[in-house]
Amino acid sequence: GVTMGCATNNYLTKRSSATTLSCSQLYDNGTNVLIGTTSLSNCKFGISYSNTDLYGIYVTMPGDAIFGDASGGGGGRGRGVTGSGGECGVYGYNGSATSVLGRLGYYSNPYYYGVYAENKRTNTGTIHYGLYSSCEGSVSGGSGNDKNIAVRGRAGNHNLMNVGVFGDVGSMTKGTNNYGIYGDAVGPTNAYGVYGKAHDCGTGYGVYGVGQDYGVYGYYNSSHYGYIGSS
Image (tube, rainbow, N blue to C red; front, side):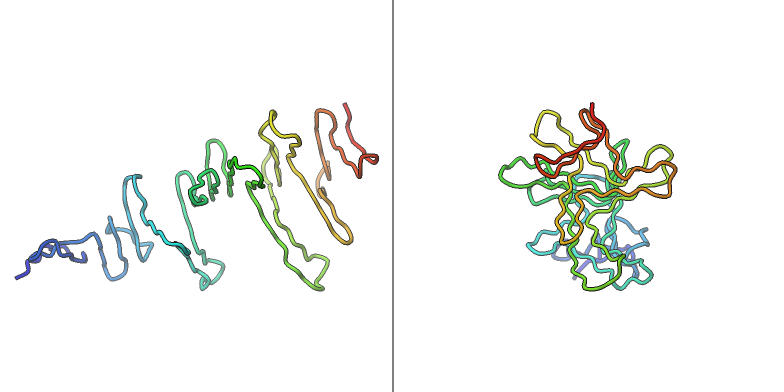
């Protein structure tokens, strides 16, 4: 006969020998299915493991390894994927190229990032983007408030400095032309490479620049140029 070697309720059994059934790692209380714990209650399937030497869930396949669909969530609650971590909430990298990576909800002492993107590829003949965003919706008609905004930065409520978009070029020894922020605009009517608007403040600057030679420098072509704040 077969000997039942699992006397603990809610554990699924497994065949451990030709004549013995023992407890497996799977715990099913009728509400939750758990591995490594019996106390998680905020999930349908949960895994608990105390070490960092392996992955809780590892999926390998050529398609979408993990897909979360929470489109049925009402009241704006549905989230396809939610993550929380000591370093970052969500971490991803491109194939074997760990030099191209991104983090969501990232902390690196003393800085906090909602979105952190890094690209340290060294191959030539291509363009490397740390962060790329595209917004190209075609709308006919509409109102004057309709806009396509690829990247929007919003900062507020800091008593020292609030910066919507900050551009930093990290190398002073490489690169012929280095730009903290570079704007290129093409349009049939009005196109602005960089457009600044300041309002509802004590002192406001649409564009503010501090430089070694010029605070702000602009040109139309080699014979039409202007600058503000010259050394």
